[in-house]
Image (cartoon, rainbow, N blue to C red; front, side, top):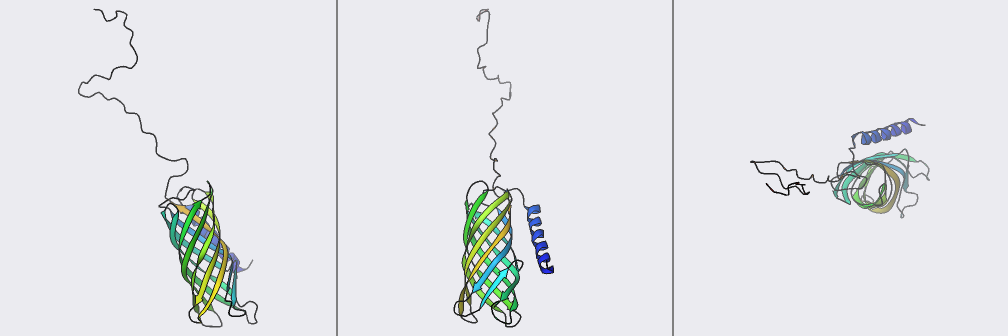
Length: 233
């Protein structure tokens, strides 16, 4: 394993440990008021511009690493943002391959759809930018807009492993060129706060207890009391 691979694996493991350590118990069913921290990992990312032959990028593990945060503003709706950084291989089919640094920032809106006690599907949209820094050309940025979806698989009430896919539209203003991007990956998500855990809920109200006050007599007994004299003096 290369030093770069070892470093990225260590950072990913550290991110997962932080999520597990600080995620307070939360319901496996998403609820309003939950805060989420996620470590986003790209497994496969491909960008291509149909009008230019051979201009495309491929990012494979361990090239991309990302983090994000989001908040459940409603029971089934989250807003947030994710950022990523790493390296991609530019023009891998052409001579003189180059490695480009890449960063991105993508605010998003996500709808969460429960699928039972341990899973919840999600779909959403995002809008932001991806910036590339090639070693043989000037840096450039692409406007990025697209849709994503996946499944949150809960390993515990406050932690999920969430595979996802994205389909994005790219636009490079410097070259007036449009393209597309496909991303496959997974997130490690910590769910913090929010609603009650399964099995929780309000406790039944306690029955009122009579307390004597001001010499008042206790309430009458509900069961008949045996009187051998039948009330006679």
